[in-house]
Amino acid sequence: MSAATALKAAILKTDWHSLSLPSGYIDAWRQLHFAAQIVSEVGKSWSQPQPDDSHTNLGWFGSINEGGFESVRSKTMPLFKARLHARSLQLDLQTDDETVKATLDLAGQTLADGMAWIETEATRIGGPRLQPSVPAPDLPHHPISNGATFDSKDQAAFDAIARLYGNTDAMLQTLRKSLPNASDARTWPHHFDHALLSVVKTDDSAAMAATIGIGITPPDCVNDAGYWYVSPWQKHPATDGLNWNELTTGAWVDREGSVPMALLPVTDVAGADEQHDAVSQFIAQASAICLRNLQEES
View 1: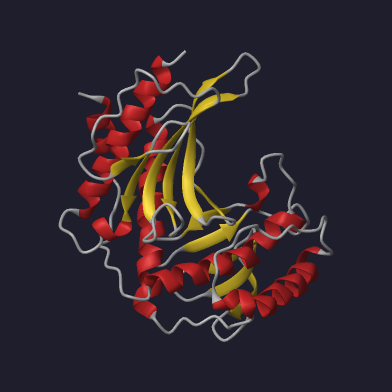
View 2: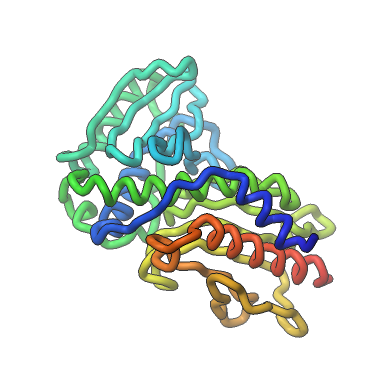
């Protein structure tokens, strides 16, 4: 059995909920991106800082249809975390015993309102911030950044984004068991990508020398629809002699001066037949090619 076939077989064991993309899905995606900044405040200011900024990232909780994003736990007592329900735009603060201590419906609220709420409620539960937070750079343009309110009326659009992240999380959590030194799947609030990182090689000082990032990311300058990606990286790029085989689904995107990245737009999958098979094939095939190339390079 080839590496790609084995990886695909593992991914296909996960649940998949059919995707469709209503016209407002990008707006819903942008709104959730901004809402995630509120949730990440708990990790930024009430948890233990990490050198790689992983204290700021978010995990996926719940089911594919009813889940959302949650912060890392606080360092303060009682331990608590913030959560964002993806379908409803509802925020809550929850202690480790799963007691909900505060809730806020973001619909009709501004980003500033949400930030003020989490400042007040997190301080009430865990005391003052342990360290200041740093706003995420390069957030996408959206009226919310200029004071507009969140709006969750387009339920189908928020359902679509919840399914994009829920489906992807299920696949990544299974895939990580078959990849070398793979991290948990996490959402990084600055780009709002949900991804894992597999460390293929380290150097003599145990620093990363070759990695593969696999995940999903919102529309950006690479693709204006949003996409799944498989992104190899080398500390000392060596592209000569490597074979980036044509993909059955998706395609390689050239990155000048570096190895290419595999990309599958979400619009190529939503509404199509055999969605799970198509995404699994893309991730498995591109990952196997990256593993082969990075492992062969000295």
